[in-house]
Length: 243
Image (cartoon, rainbow, N blue to C red; front, side, top):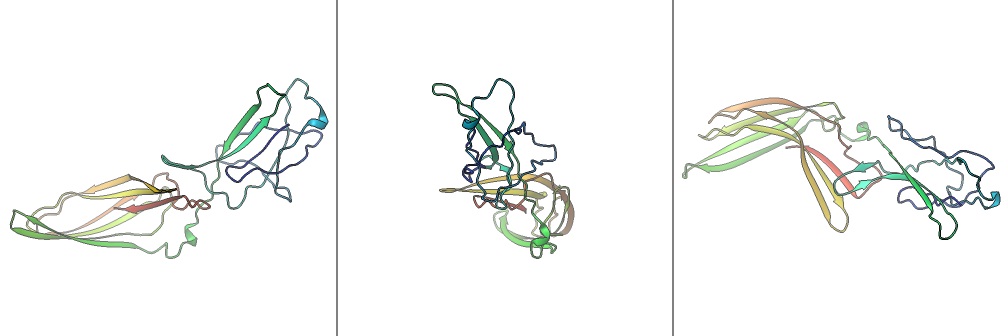
């Protein structure tokens, strides 16, 4: 007998019968990440199924066909240091008692692209400002005003994030270098929330002299990264922001 067959954590797919002849595998993942085609039977259930009515398989290579439709709710594949979303097809040959069963599994990847056009106001500028007061030389005080913005609120891989920064130094002391960084923050939700925070890319500008104002324009190219929203997965949340 062959089975059961299951898709990730969606459970097993109920019984079905085997045609007289057919093929099974091998399965491989194409370079472009395609796997298929798949189609689902009307009842949406698969395996286990039995070869009992066909007797013992003779020596040689045998293949058995199957196909199924990926559920619309299947989440995008993802792998991180504290969690992952994977999909695989499993197959097993059940042998006689006291004999070793043969099992095999093949991973495949699902990509549900995030359409930025569906996010409201994604084409608008993203702005933020901050002010910091500090003391220096024991008795003197000063203030630094910072206003920063990006040209959009969403980007795709390979696109440039245009950063505009205005900094006013209201003190008698020079500032340090201006640094803008693209930061990735991933939240893994289970019994407690675990955060993974890392700097993806950064650019650096010159310090601002005492009592001076500076305008700084720079850009960061977006490298290959997981998309912000893993559609279909509520346990892993990804955010990106400029710091």
